[in-house]
Image (cartoon, rainbow, N blue to C red; front, side):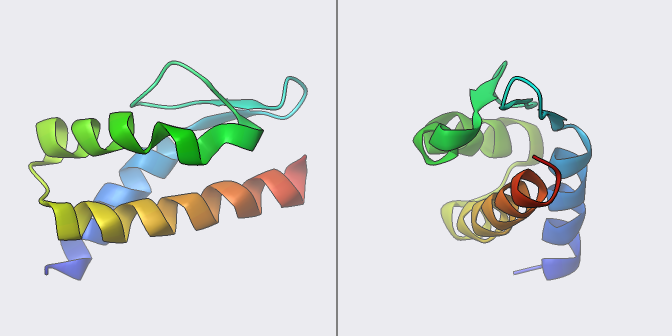
Length: 80
């Protein structure tokens, strides 16, 4: 896997995610908005987005997803 490329994909998706701490949801490039408590439920739209936009395979998507989720939860905890 090209981790340098995957990290750039991750950075891009994170930069396109807008946290709304007041309403406890996030606006993402792969789904209009996601309530904080249900990020794990949006794996399918995330997968579709990564395949269509970045051409990632399942193993690459797994890497990006796991890191995205960690960043998402960290931002939620630190700013919410």
